[in-house]
Image 1 (cartoon, rainbow, N blue to C red):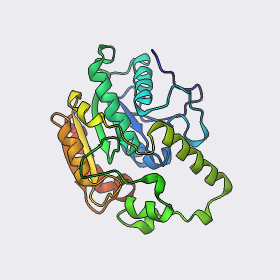
Image 2: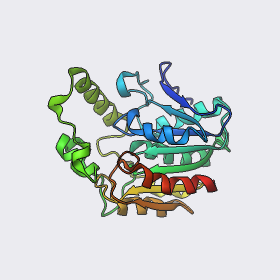
Image 3: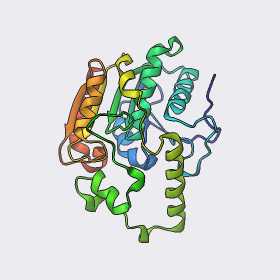
Length: 258
């Protein structure tokens, strides 16, 4: 069964349309959190950066009710558009979506050749013994900054300074994330299925991330055949925001090989 993306799906495009496709997948914070990745990749790739259905006021079809369903929908769109050898780059929940896409693509001949490589940046989704995912939904703004940033003062957003519209978007995004990713932001089957991934994979971890720790990320990398692991110093859950140059220093050599 085909899972359809909504008609109002927002897709930011950058770079040369004839270049290799890089699909950039954002996390719970929305599309603005991956803007540096889009800008960095645009000179070499045709970058596609969708706003996940239900985020930032967009519609979410009822059948997009899980990360697995969202992954299938994105694969079907790439297939319909004739995309081959795409690089999937995901942050946080987006990293989970990217890995799920790679798992599904390897298991279904319809998607042969669609996915060429995966970069998972501080992705959630797996259940790793001894390295639990932080309870995002139990954290206030201060607590989220403490677990997600090497320097929490850079990540803290005082709720008192937000507009009513911004608060409404945050509430709506949180509700969508709870439906699609679940309140535990994990799938207990994912870690065991990562052995099916058949494309080059890089797992990146901010050294100071306490949403998913480097130990968690190492376990995810170990579950993917041949995957590489890289740690970004002085960075938390969003290293491309907090330490962009150090992030590109681990991402670019990988891209040069795949």
